[in-house]
Amino acid sequence: MPRRVLIAQKFASLGGAQKSLVHHLELIDRRRFEPRVVVSNEGWLTRELDRLRVPWSLMPFKHWGNLASLPANVLLVRRLRAYIRRHAIDLMHANEHWVGPACQIAASKEGIPAVCQFRTGLEDLTPRRVRKYRYAEFDRVIVVADVLRRSLAPQLEHPDRVAVVRDGVEPFPNRRHQHGSRRIAITIGAIYEVKGQAKVLERALPWLKASRRHYLVFVGGTRKDPAYVEKMKRVVTRHSLGRQVRFLGPREDVPRLLGMADALVAYSTVEGIPRVVMEAMLAGLPVIVSNSAGMEEVVDGEVGRIVDFDDAANPLFAALAEMSANPEKWRAMGRRGAARAAERYSTHAMSKAIQGIYNEILDGR
Image (tube, rainbow, N blue to C red; front, side, top):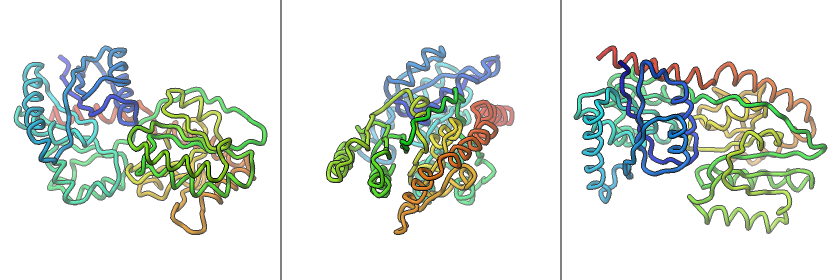
């Protein structure tokens, strides 16, 4: 009889954690596991769950650790416990750490194991936050980078409970579009301060001004911080770059957009390894990434460049200038990145590893 796994996700909007969850559910062995999902709202994820015929329910996950949210979180834990009992759940899986504490408490009270996935950066692994999100209480904590495991494990009583499983990316047709002498750099992700798009724009200004054939494209929603985006647009206007800098908003045709670009630029302080970096590599795109901890596990000089966005010498400009001057060299880097991503970052490998963790915990119990 399949074991029943309840997976929790805070928001249903399209994002890296949601994509990884859908890929995992597409590949999960239904003879061994019967998945169910709880999520705070309806959206892209719930539509995908309907497509996959995975049962889902709404649960109002709130900010954890906020006294104002304490009554709502107490009620949430009660609802989760009732759900676990009603559906005879065997294992709880928090797909991101934001929903972890409520899931862990409910699972513990009902006597079932719990797993949590952690996808953000080292700054979220301070002792205070490790206690807040109850990492030591989980049967397994899954992280997406070795650097995160090395930071978290020493803070836990059982460091062997930390497992590295990289987010998998799904292959899609590699249709590279040639567009003459134009050079297009693209960034992808929700646009707000911690994602650093304003810094990308600031550092790319000399490259944009060097040629009217240079373009910078931002893909991602702006609802989280509209004032941040408006500030960026004022910079674009002040430098008369409205024709070269484009804000496309949230899109679901990311593979097509990657096929039109010459390089991905990814800056982030909140993720160990942004999923979009592996997606771009798989699409055959060279990548220019910030020197955040963990990036060196994926990117080297063979497939892209790691740059310090705070360096006064502006290595982002140097990388973009090199891309413009040596397009064939950079296309070769993209081809090497595609081969590496196909070998190391498949959705099959990700789902197989997670299912192995399920089995290990449940069989051990």
